[in-house]
Length: 252
Figure 1 (tube, rainbow, N blue to C red):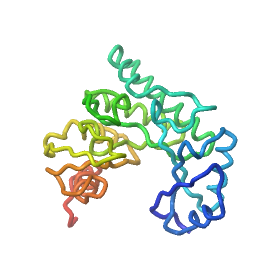
Figure 2: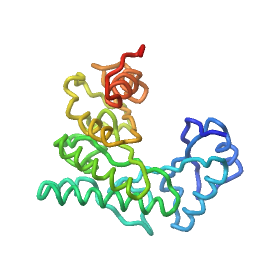
Figure 3: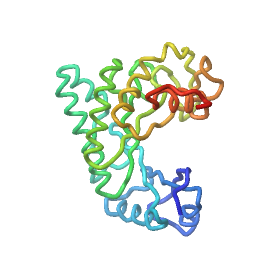
Figure 4: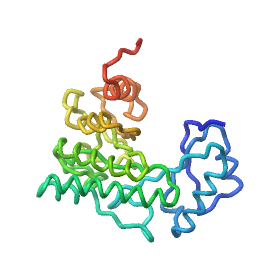
């Protein structure tokens, strides 16, 4: 049996018979864990083993665990600072900031890999425009070059610990005020004005980025659908544009 395209969650700290029935469905390929799934390091290890035992090949296990406000597991894990703290070190000493970003990525990934988790949705590469209700100190910096350098270092640290990175939130969440968990933010900039927001993705992809999380943000000057449901953003701009060394046409 191969892994399917769907990522699902489970409600508790151990699997129920219903959970196992759902996870055995062919369309399921991965499980995302949340704070509600965590009581202790030992319990988390046991839950991950249960999930991985349901299928062969085993389901991927993921978590949105980036540090600061977005850290799902705390007791028994290093409490990581928000990414803005790394950006402030970079302002004082760029090389020290890049080393810290690498160490940050390695530690985050090593602790999660130690309990069997395959993926963490980090780093956040949104630019800090100073307006977003949900990004804020999750952003490294306002300068796209600084964000790109720090994110690449973080990705390389995660890779050294055995975990791929997931850059987010494509194509950018930092310039809109609303929290996309609660409403649909609208960014009215045309594509030509999003060059800075896309730069970190270009650099990360050039350095082997394996995964991207798409934003639930509407860019009406680019497409009528929110980015996460947009063929223009996901296929044309990301797959045929940023992720391809030669920009391909839809008929290629």
